[in-house]
Length: 145
Image (cartoon, rainbow, N blue to C red; front, side, top):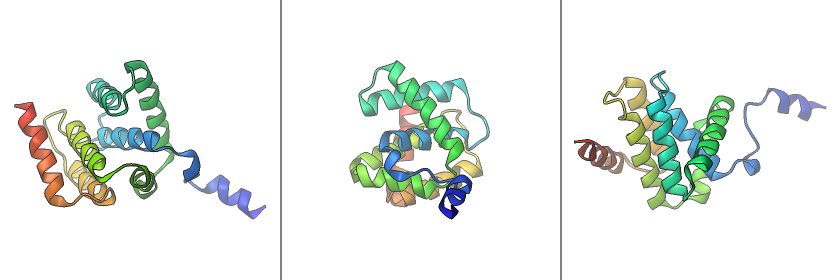
């Protein structure tokens, strides 16, 4: 009985039901929502990034983004999401995820303090150091020029 009550009030989703693809989608959505503006441009960018990274067609990527939006609403814990990602995704691919996160944060050409804090926390949780995160950010800024 107590376990059922704990499950009802627990914000965590069972990790064995959470895939790394879902966790990546949720983290990308969270990055887009960090500045409290979740634009169509950001949604389209997330679809594009998921499509490329996971070799999905655009419709499959949209479905995955929608699942990521649902998870982002349900899961408050970045640790839970990044733990799933780190379990299944190599360091090099996590570096690519950091680039994608920067691409989303910089999509509107502004960086808020909340976005900077989010990126510092997420990159560390993904096991990426500040130097490599800065390199990823500069790479994206140079591509935008």
